Image 1 (tube, rainbow, N blue to C red):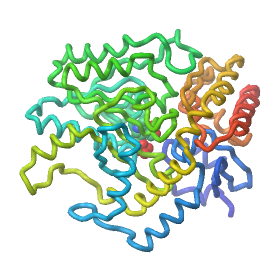
Image 2 (cartoon, rainbow, N blue to C red):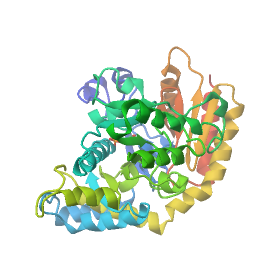
Image 3 (cartoon, rainbow, N blue to C red):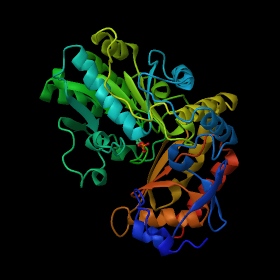
Image 4 (cartoon, protein in one colour):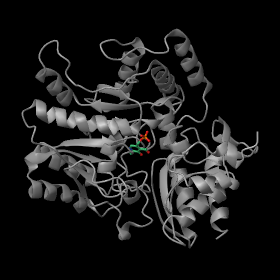
Length: 436
Ligand SMILES: Cc1ncc(COP(=O)(O)O)c(C=O)c1O
């Protein structure tokens, strides 16, 4: 098939330089394990698990078969006042992976929807306890919480909000945790815990009883993998506890083994009240997200409603879609059978060694990393993000896919990666950086 401009005309691509792309299309027609295969027959190593979502590798047959079987059996069941067994089964399996006490699962269809849902849960929780005045949310600079209006309002990445109005009122932002003195620090930096005190300042500035929740990604992902300083998340937890503020972790990237533990919460030993997730939940074979909620938050909302009444006026036509549940369950099986979380933990030191070895290149101005997740910055040229986009294209033509955000590169290989894949990934990165 000829992928000329006429063929490409009608699809408006997301987060893409459409005009540039259509002049030099990069189409993937097949995926398998660690690789994607392009329309012109090239094999591309996947250094970012698609978009951090294909944790068990591309196009797993086990998942495809489970989805196909479910679609034949019951392709759709309305999720309001009716359900299907896989929803309960997946919630049960998932609750075995989430931290103890975060056992109530609400299903959605994407990470962005999980953020809307978590915000509504926070509003509803406080409303149910007679504290409906708690309507402020504390987020963080450089945060990425998806693209729906809730996520855009919480966002701390300028391009993602600049054109889209003022957002939901009452959202305030703490400082981000990137500090110049922490450049090239592997794992959690020693300095920066004091940045968590921004939450206390917000509480003192607005009144602690006006704040519904503080929301952070355990590691700020899309912006470039900012690992929290030692003690930072613990301090946020303490401040939330003192003031009755809910702590929400957005685990959309950090979840499902990426950090060498089931979720960021377990990796850093800090347990939030609410956790959002998506992406690797179904290994990206079906769109799905979820929100895990603590017993306290769940029972407060349920018990505030009259007996027999709907407790939470929220849900989507495709909440707990049968095909997505089937994909989720098959993914959980793969996580168990292939011990993917432990694999990520085992490979992490080697992965970080190889990635940090790139720090001898002058063009690299910082590297950060934790688990099977790393970010690096390249010095910009021709305006912010211009070199980043060019670099991503060159990588693709050299046989490697990674996610770039501006001039930051994000490395998050599938958890099935072996040392040879890490070696190859770093080889292509080095060779391509040397082209500049
Ligand atoms: C931390 C975080 N939250 C939310 C989202 C939004 O997820 P989705 O693109 O599935 O809506 C993302 C996507 O990358 C993310 O990284």
